[in-house]
Picture 1 (cartoon, helix red, strand yellow):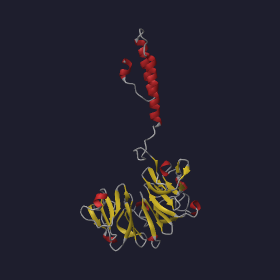
Picture 2 (cartoon, one colour):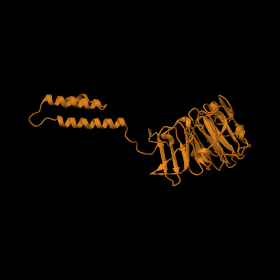
Picture 3 (cartoon, helix red, strand yellow):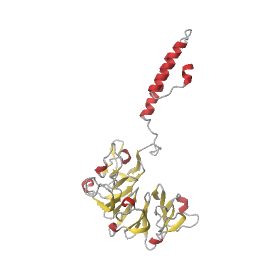
Picture 4 (cartoon, helix red, strand yellow):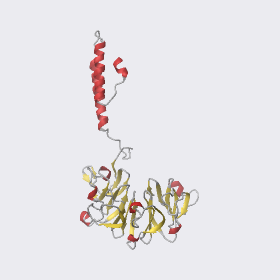
Length: 335
């Protein structure tokens, strides 16, 4: 099961039939599946051409991608508005929105709803494909890594300043990792909205693109840096990764011991952990504590109650609340 937040992809050994099993394991919009003959079926939103049917029509039920009828499909990957398909020969087909070179066919714009082979990968024996926001990548059986598409955020992994690396890459370009990874080769590849993660065969995790915490780094990483070792840790010890997934602003990884690790934005609790109180929240809490102390000290002693003392307490209360960004209610002065 694989896919983008707008659609999903699933592999199954059975042909699509009413009630089983594709509709049961996927969600609406655009989805892909493979049946026992390794044919590709798509359905959902076709406005970006990512269904591969040759038009922009939306489809409510699985429909075979006929332009690939003669191909034995082995893998599929869904990007934001484009799709990659890997066939048994090791060749790669793409279709969908072509802006920024996401399809790998050269400088193009608009939508291309019919599958077309990526000439830059022909004969490369591709084993892994990944489609992201408006960029894509592939790994060959020999461990060669290629990326293409939108590179303005550094998600293609090329250090800025190299010839042609400071703009979009409309055709697949090989990314050499020898200087940073020693003898280890790329094993898996994930493309997110604006970033990319590569796991080497020795478990080392490399990331690039919009980042910092969302890419597993303790500080912001210059987008000109190219792929950088994420160096995830478990306790005080570095750990090697077995798998990784990228969200729009967070990352999840599984290490060789089976531990799940998350990093990045936790605004929607996507890290699976209780968020730490923000600095603003901590300031408000401190102000409320001060307010309570002021109210307590301002309470008149028995037999000497006075409106003046209460008024000063309320005034101090209001000032304390104001200092902490908390508004005192009008009733406070009358308490």
